[in-house]
Each structure stands twice: as C-alpha cells, then as structure tokens.
Image (cartoon, rainbow, N blue to C red):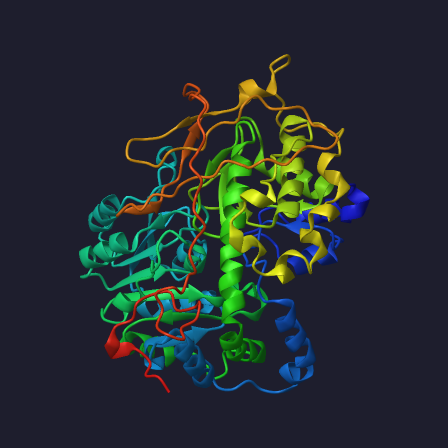
Length: 531
C-alpha cells in the first residue's frame, strides 16, 4: 500500500492534530484519503443494514430528502412497539449526543461522577455548562476494571449528585453484569440521577439479558441510554433513545423539538420489523469476528489486549511506541485508520481502540501493525472454516455476496514486505519469540490469552490455523474481565485455551414472535399490549 494509493495522507494526518473526537470520513475524503482505506475508528455494525435494505433506501431516496418526516411521537411509538415498551417511557433524540445534552441541561444541577476513560461527551458536556465533573480513574493495573463498591464510595466521598456508568464501557469494552448494575442503582438510589449508558450493549453476548431497562422504568432516578446508530451501523442517521419512568422520560421528551428526527430515521425504524432475523445474524457474526480479532491481536509481541464485550477492542502498544506516529504510518503506508486514544481523559497515546471488522480487513491491520512496530510483515493465522462456529455459514449472502469476505479474493498486500523504518524495533540479535509478553492474571480474573509459540517467519503461502479463543466467565460482578499483560511477569507454560461455544440466538427467551431487538425482560405494567 503506497501513499499514492491512499491519497494525500500528509494533509489527512494533520486533521488528527488536537482533534477531539477524531475527524469523520467527510473531511478525510476532502483531504484526499482514497476509497480503499479501511476504517478501524468508528464503532459500527459491518453486517447491517443488509444490501437489500440499502436498495430500499436508494429507491426511496427522493421521497426521504423531499418530504418532512412524521412527528417524533409517531416514530417513537413504532420503536416502542418493536421493543415491547410503552411510548411514554421513551424519548428519541437526534443521536445519543442530543439526549446527553438535554440530560445535562435539565437533570445535572451541580456535579457528575463518571469513571474514565469513557465516552468523551459524559465529561465534556457537563464541563461546558460549568458543572463539576468527578472523574474516577479506572486502574490500568487491573485491566480498567470498574469496581462497583469502589465507585460508589468515590461518589459518596465527592458528594456527587449524578452518576454515569457506561456498560459496556467505551473504549475498553468492560461489562458489568446485570446484577452488579442493579446493586449499584440500589446503592445510589438517593442521587438526583443515575445514567446507565447501554449504547454498545447489543454487541454483548455474555448474558442473555444484560440490560436494566426494566428496572429503569420502575425507579424515579434512573435513565438508560441507547444508541441505534452504533447497533444498526448507521451513524449518519443520528438517532438514539432513552428509557426511564414516564415522568422522567416525559420531562426530556417535552423539551425535544417536534421534528428532531429525520426522514431517514423514520424509514429505517419502520423497516426494522421486517429485518430482525438479519439483524440477529449480524450480531452473531460480529461476535465471531470479535473473538477471532482479539485472539489474533494477542499474538502480536508486546501488545496488551483487553477482552471486550463491545464492537471494538482496546489495546496498548509496546513500550517505546508512539501512538500518534503509529496511527499516521498505518494511514500513510497501509491505508488503515485507527483511533489513537491520547486525547481521551484517563488514557494515553499508547492506547488504541480498534473496531471489530472481518478477517480480510483484520489481516490488513495486523500486517500494518507488524510492519510499523517490528519492521516485518507478519500476521496472525486465520482460523480454518471447519473450526469456526456453524453460524458463520448460515447466511451465504454475508459471506459470499460481498467479494471482500471471500478467502480466494484476499489482497496480495497481506504478505508484502515494507521497507519503511519501524516505530518499535526489537533489540539487535534477539529473536521475535523472546519479545512475546508474558500474561499476568490478578486473583479472581479469567485466564489470560496464552502467548504464542516461537513465531514462524513469513511464508509465501501460510496455512491457516485456529487462533486461540477464550472462555468468558459468568461472574456476578464483572462479566467481561479485561486481561492485563505485563512485560515483567514470567512466561507461562504452553497451554491451549478452551474453545468458546458459539453464542445462542440472542432472542431465545423473547416472547413468541419477538425480535432480536428485545434483549431485556419487561415488567407487565410497562409491556406494550399485543395487537
């Protein structure tokens, strides 16, 4: 991948200087970044909408752009019916950012407590309106694990009146169990407000029903926030919703403009009922991709990888690597965009959040990272088809119709050697295998990824082997426990990680006729009556 193939990458990298958040595809396109760039920055669902849905939107494009949408109440009622919620417990916004803004203006009076690193708007928005933001630093030494009791004690010690918990957290993907979140809501029942941001919860598969929506509608001070753009792979549509008891939801809803949702949002919400099986399939495929990508990244020497329940993976670069330099070289030399987290509070430039993508894209990322960090184009092997979960082949349209996913059409750059200087080079004379980090697991946490055996040199035609996978624990407190990798711990004995079973259908406990979006139990008092 050359600079010419990527575009005017020199101008493009300037867009990242001091940017918070990172630039969207539009300014990058105007800066000359080409169409062949693979974006690992923006968390989305790569398998949804389906080509059929895009075809419908294309046919209706003239009407969508020409006519007013229906009032927000009409669109909200349709989504409520799909989720089996009462419309009066919901408020839909022009993206979750609009809802965060109104929550801050209406319900945050003086102070807000939030763990960091996390979504930037939960720290930036209150500070922009003069509120005190009490930041609880998640400990890197513990894999950025949120200790519920420690956070509650922190809220008490600072006298915070509002608490926010992102579950799963962004950027590390750590997930608290439903039971742990409910316990925190009980412990903070006297606060003005508790917000549970579940924007990425649709991607979690550690629990059948991890959401606390059913608890929110029964409590006077709890709001659950959801983002449709992330789940459905449609960030540009800008739509999200919150769920709370009718009085709290109505207070937010009364301040929203009557036409705060656009026609794209209306058309898609009314399409969802017909495409629920495809949506459920997309989540299963993304879960498979996350397992493979996490295991493959863990094979890179010196790279710390934190297991995630989101649609992204949080990694720490090896000692001595500069994240901004790695980001710029990946774009200029390999056509790969990554989210360097140096401008995230509680993080540093050695951390990156990498969006989960399919294998051809992941191999491109691995080749780029290997070349930039170690000066050699090595990549982790791809699991063979007979060792993948059976659901990987259930929908041929996802695996076959799109050429980029076909094995026989993998790009030639996977094994291309790069001559550019590396940002992180191994010591002279030291074999690559000796740089492989050992794994350290604090007591009570899940087993770490096993370090690979001595690394083979790149071969002209490597055989694909199964990447190690991890059995996720079902802990009452932390469902997805990050693994901390250190350079100083002794090398573990070789062992094979147990194979993780394929996730069951996400709507297996839903009522008869229920769809993939119904991922939480609902009390009868607030359940939408059947037609």
